[in-house]
Image (cartoon, each protein chain N blue to C red):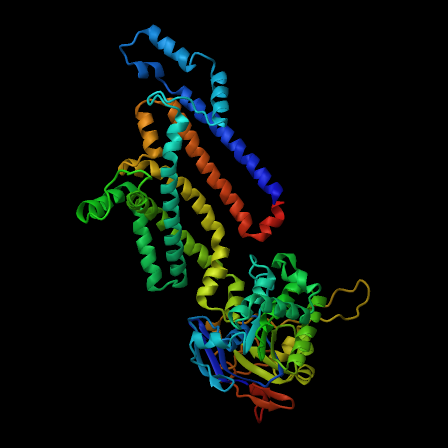
Length: 320
Length: 315
């Protein structure tokens, strides 16, 4: 259904994505993880044809068998919401504050699908029901500032579902929410994906949310896919040093004696360098704990792991 | 909302009262003897004293103020010293022209500014945007009265399409409208240049907001996103400037009416000042101030109508 082959996105500042492969079958749920600046949001935007005007795409991106790599805005517009939809990180900012949320959700129904006001209203009500908004009829008449964070995200999900998309891209949908609300949103996305047979691309830096939401995992770093595979297996047995670092950096409740100092969170030293300063070889060079001299200069090819692929020189044949 | 309107109305009336005090005080501090102006320097002191008594000028200032403001409340602004007829009648005769000129100037300003400003924002950093910025820079730099003279030279003297000035009266609507075209353009050009720039920057600001990305992801057309999502969110600064510009247009009408010989309030205030007809000037200044304060009152109400978040706080 969706196929990205060696997809690269070049911005004036540097390469935001380098040769990313990603395929999505109907109903499939894929997680995309990485730090800020790893290129995961750029990947989401690329799937929507919404990369910045200054971005240059290369490689190949097909949707329903159609090559969209060099598609014009007009062609993308026809697909958005109807074939592929997206929800964003900040549910407050992502809703027009001057409109009732019902008006916002009805807009694509009326403009894209040509429904009458009454039909669109009934459909919006059904959508609000489907995403689990309490008292949906009242919610439709409210403004974004009158809803809670979780309710706003549910309204945005209803908006994304309005035209029955085959694919939903969720870019950090839970980051701005409380942990408990976030978990319920994750469960909602999984349920919707199952009920509707809708593919889900779940972009997050929250490994727990990704493990809960998805079946397959793609780990991005500096615009490269560094590891991929079945989500549980990759998290249980990461093969790329970056994936290991991400997992170690995850906050976990641990038993500790009363008065004992809180254990420091393990962190990957440094942060993702700016695009222009990324090493030409392995993007992780410079921060990698097991780096070897050739890493910064030579790009590692993806190697099979027991549960997928990982791109690290240490996995190459003959490596210790 | 009702409480908000009530509070704003009280504020509006209090402002008007304060203005009337200031206007009255300033007018009465001005040097010069109105009786001398009316009767001329050859008049006798007795005659001038009699006239002052007749005008009520021999009574204390506070008493005169109360009489004036009490009359103004029921639409009686006294009798003009130079025209010899009630000031209220003079104003009522000329107000429609000035308001028509101000309204048409404001409408043209809004249409031109929104079209150009939004088009420039949509074409940000492309030739269309640069052209608008250059044009508006020119528009701001040109003084309205000078533009008015150029327009008269071109459209009235050379091309003879429109009358160079004067007003045929409302009895001939077509002729009346055509005599307002050049004054309207002269008034609107500078204002629309300013407002177009404000619109452009407010729209650019609003375009950066996240919900614009959501709208795009929903597959809405760029025009729809621009007018239905970006513009409403850009309206607050636009409305603020429009309120200030309305004051500018009304006072600008004073100059433009004199260039085009239009018998409006601007022409009247000009004549009254020349004739030292202080009682008329006093009423007119109050009138202009009231129009400006009313425009600001409407701006305050408009904010709340635009933004539901303010409505919640306004009650």
